[in-house]
Image (cartoon, rainbow, N blue to C red; front, side, top):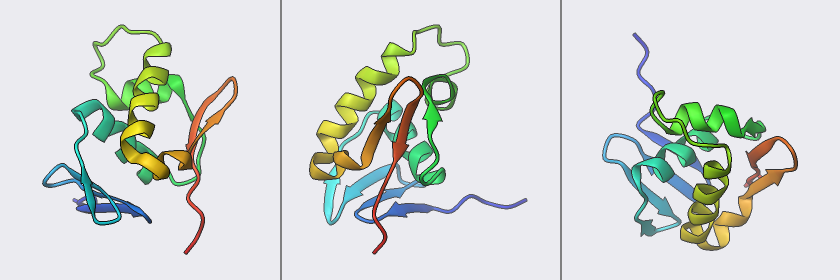
Length: 104
C-alpha cells in the first residue's frame, strides 16, 4: 500500500497532512477542516482545473447536500487566510478553480 506524502507543497504553500498544519512561507495559518481539505485537493492536483462538483465531493462528506455556491464561499475565505498566496487560486469561469503557482 502506497502512503500519500506527509507534506504537500507548492511554494510558498505547505501542508503537513499528518499534523493538519498549513503554512504560507514560515507563517502558520489556521484553517477549518473544509479549507484544509480544499487546499490539499489543489496541491494534489497541481494546475488542473477542478470543477465545483469535484471540490464538493472531495472537501465535504458525501452526504453533504449543499450547492456549488458553497464552494465559492469557502474559496473566498481560504484566499483571505492565505493572504498574498490566495492569488494563486484562480477562478476558471463557468467551471471551477485551479491552483497556479509559478515555478521556482
